[in-house]
Image (cartoon, rainbow, N blue to C red):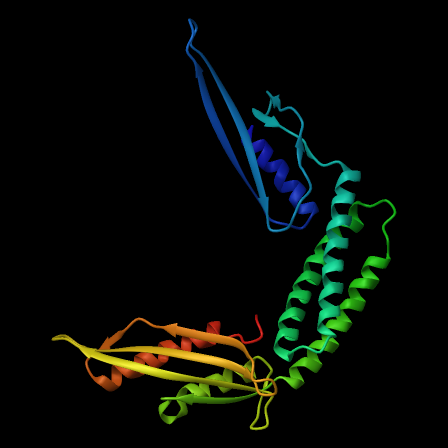
Length: 275
C-alpha cells in the first residue's frame, strides 16, 4: 500500500514539476484484554521542494492479477487553485513592500540585500503562477504582467544601487596586502566597484598567532572586518572569524596554509550585501 501511495504522489508531483518525498510512520497498539487485540495505525508525511496543496488518497484496491495495490492520489481542483492564488498574491505583496523600501533613501547595501530577497520572492511567485495557471479554469493574466513589471523594477534599482556601492579596502596587519587583494577580487566578482573615492570603506585587521611543539609549527589566524558608510560613519556590515590553527614543518609554510584557509572562507562567506 505504501508503494502504491508513493507512486501516486510521484505522478502528481510531475504535474506540479516538483520533487516529493514521503515517509510512512506506523504505530502498533496492543490492547491488553482477553483477546490481546492488536491494531496498527499508519500516517504518511509528504514533503516537497515547493508548497503543495493537501493531497488525498482513495481506498487501496488490490489487483489480484498483477499482485499489487492501486491507489489514486488527488487534490481538489478549486481548493488547490485558491491555495496557489493566495500564495501568489502574498508573495507579490511582499515584493511590492520590498520595492517601496528600496525606493526610499537608505544605504545602497541594504537596498541590494532587500532587492535580492525580492528576486527570490519573484522566483517563488513564478512557480506558484505556473501551478495556478494550470489549475484555474479562468486564470487572471494580470499576475504574469505584474511579475514581469516587478522584475524590471528590481533590475533597474539593483543596477543603480550597485553603481552607488563602491569600496575602499584598508586592512591592518596585512603583509604584502594579501587580504586586501583577496577582498578586492571578491567585491569585483560580486559586481562592485573598488575605488579610492568610495561610498563604503572596509576597515579591519588580520592577525596570526604562532605556536609550536615537538612535531610542528602552528599558525592560527583571525580576521575582523567592518563595512562603514563613509557618508554617515555607520557600520553596516561586520565579519569576524577566529579560525582553527594549521600546522607545518616551517613557520612560513604554516602561515601560507593559514592564509589560504582564510581566503577560502572569505570567498565562500563574505557577502556585504547578502547572497
